[in-house]
Image (cartoon, chains in turn orange, red):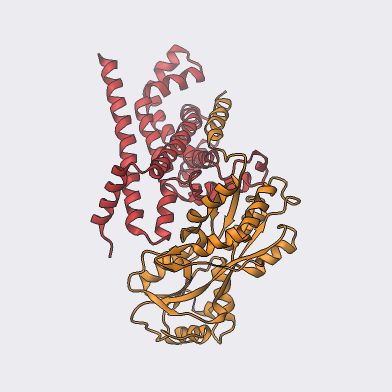
Length: 269
Length: 235
């Protein structure tokens, strides 16, 4: 009896808040959410199509895992090889380039490793390691973390040997890693969008930027209705198509924080 | 670096502004955690009373397990509930993941052991006092449990408040099963985590102060209800 009543209670509280019929769930990387892009962009889409968009913002690795469990209709992340694997495995219908920005390395104003102004990222990383300066890594299998690991792989340094010493893996999101890195005076690699909109910069500034290797591409993938029958396939497709359409691309390019453009649309025509 | 004064200012401004988004988040926090508390009490109090009044083999082990479960890590509860409610999980067909219902389920699992273990202690102490009296009245187990739960109701309110406090303050479970979706599953604690990750520490701390005021309000309300009830009982 108690159990029945409980079930009724749960249902009663759940129903009014269930997502409306024409809505989709986006499994997303954090930078697009934390930088305020969605707050600006999604209402424009909803007005154009009547489709409500809910966003779960987690690291790219976790977003892809959640989408593999069919817990989302669209994937919007930034780790191209992992995204292509997702589509190759039949989990997504197709992957489209959406927009880009770049990664930067931020560091304290006194720049203990003396890397400020360097344009090549790998010599800068070697210099940081060589100087024994602290480096805070995401360490969470996110898109930014995957990128960082691939950059270290091209250097003469194996940061894992310094783990816990000068190489600090926070195992958390971009914002948490920035908070931790800034707290301990470590260099941090972050995407530019998160950095510009981040409010706890203290004396930190961008020290390394401009290397072509720091390119950061975002892609959008509707989750396949064949593998995941529960997805809202039509609305997911409509969302991906709108984002990559002229209207969506223009809206992305128009988003500014502090007078700076955060994302540069580059969907194929 | 960190200005507590600024955070208090933010908190006061937030409350006074009556900001719609904030009210929505506060309302959802209350709804989820209060519902979870009621559900956890519906499960935990009878279980606690039953264990308190019965003697059986392995009772000691049951007590140890009940007490240990009070320390369930929210993240682990969240993960287990996620694995069950995920579309790929056994209960995925219900479509409950990323809804307030999922958050209520997770918090109920988290705090049911607290209500069970604490009520067991409260009722066992009371039972020791009344055992002979009950035996002379030839009460059934069910009647005994009901009588004890009723007599211990004020102490059990404190048990419920302990559960509520744990539920409303946790972030690990609701973050995983709710997803911190704006206007759908965002509650106070996940909003605080979000603002912290944006580096907006004064706003995060301001929200934290609002959450503490909220907990204070709920406790004050329960306290005044209890006073009224006691006064009427003796009137």
